[in-house]
Image (cartoon, rainbow, N blue to C red):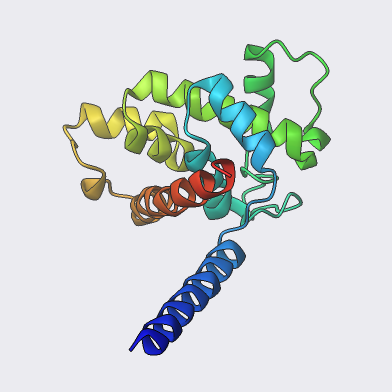
Length: 178
């Protein structure tokens, strides 16, 4: 009986380790320290920023969308230029969006700005994806729920980031608690 319980325990631990390895493979922890530092600076959860990067670029710092958004957090150059000016970064150039440190810093600042403007993380994410002007128009039109937003891509994006955030919250707690 004791021998069987021991082997059941060993099997359980092995399965748990495999699941953790799969989670870490599917949900990269690249730039974890940089993400954590910028998120904390802006009053956001590192798990949220990691989730957003996962949804935007899957941690590819050279990613570029068909609309011209660049880098880890897929920031449009015009938006990044505006953000850099607001942040007092006079040395900003579009090429800096391919730099992970600069991209995370600007993208995190921008999400924090949108959160302050909208007052709700779901609406801030919707603004990040679909534009703040659209979010303001939707809310003026009486749309109270992300599910009612007329852009299916934006609805999907918000839900995906919030789901990924739960996974990253677990992974960040696991990583930084040891």
